[in-house]
Image (cartoon, rainbow, N blue to C red; front, top):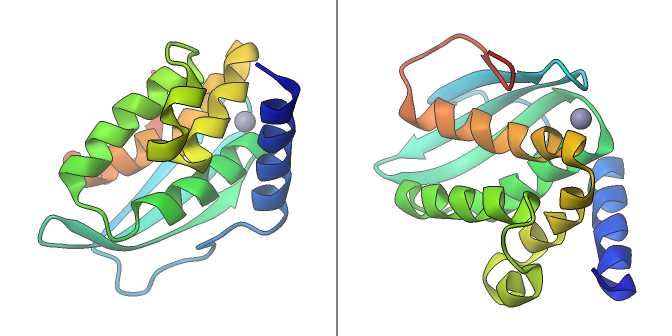
Amino acid sequence: MDSEFRELYQEIILDHNRSPKNYGSLKDATHRLEGQNPLCGDHYVIYLKVEGDVVKDIRFEGKGCAISKSSASVMSEFVKGKKISEIDKYFELFKKIVRGELDPAEYMDKLGKLAVFAGVSEFPIRVKCATLPWHTLHSAIHSKTKEKVTTEE
Ligand code: ZN
């Protein structure tokens, strides 16, 4: 990873950790799910307002490390207004990016700030911090569970 990319990574994590987007609860949520990563102590609730096959609105609240919080914040900006089928595809790409399986430079146009989370791939223990909000979102949309999801089963 070049130094310019690393700077961008740090800047986005710091920015979104300090002032997360879409933070708080959603009164008219159609979906709500808790997600936790016990390895790090990350714990969030994700609220969604889904209409048809589109995520019309999203909020999250909770606490955790800078990586999980900034990931939730960037994700919330990214998925708002998108179709569920698109979100599923981006989730697959995001998992590959944070595991270092794709070159983020090739995906900057498509993924924007999400691609920057490739920086996490250098710290395998933090990969679950970055993917927790996505796993929670995915489970909230697709599973019938009203229970918590966790990165450790
Ligand atoms: Zn964490």
